[in-house]
Length: 88
Image 1 (cartoon, helix red, strand yellow):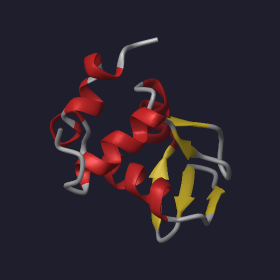
Image 2 (image 1 turned 90 degrees about the horizontal axis):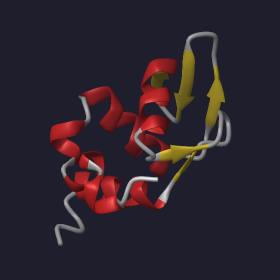
Image 3 (image 1 turned 180 degrees about the vertical axis):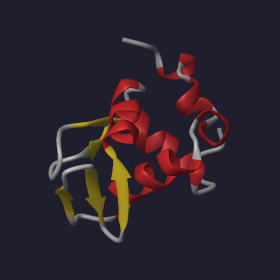
Image 4 (image 1 turned 90 degrees about the vertical axis):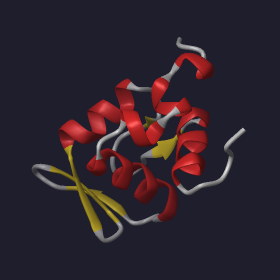
């Protein structure tokens, strides 16, 4: 397993994640309503493709399957940094 300090998605999420990955990460954190569709996952008012979810899972930011996606500790840190909290 990769150390949190060595994961660029945790240390610099704005640079290493694309817009849809950032939106999906924040939607998993902020919304409880999740369900799977044929082409992806609905996260609150947002849709995320299967490829986006697989990439976030591969980076170690989320775990589980829809409708039970949860952030890992790395995912929580990355989401806080995206929102402007936790710069240190």
